Image (cartoon, rainbow, N blue to C red; front, side, top):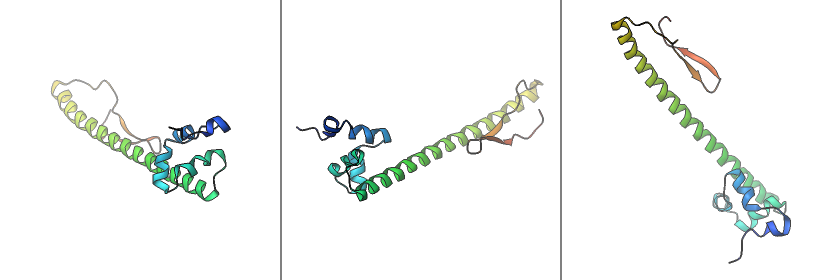
Length: 127
């Protein structure tokens, strides 16, 4: 079976590696754009048609953006869950500190906003 990615031997460019570095396979891009794998293999060699390159690059840009946004949304969801768990634990700990008259050893945390990079919400109560 012939290797589809023959360009490495003739041009020094590994088209498979080109797409993998961006996080795709040439098949992913082909399915997403409707462009043949053969035509897409010419893009990193600067031999592809402008329309083919445009379709491929716009598809990868859009998919890359969507992957990033999905990752950020998942991280924010996890942060929100962790914050809620922290608050619930603090309520219980405060009850026991009060009951046993134990002073707080560590300062209460403030909620951190990963988007602006600042603490944005302080737990009510005195430290």
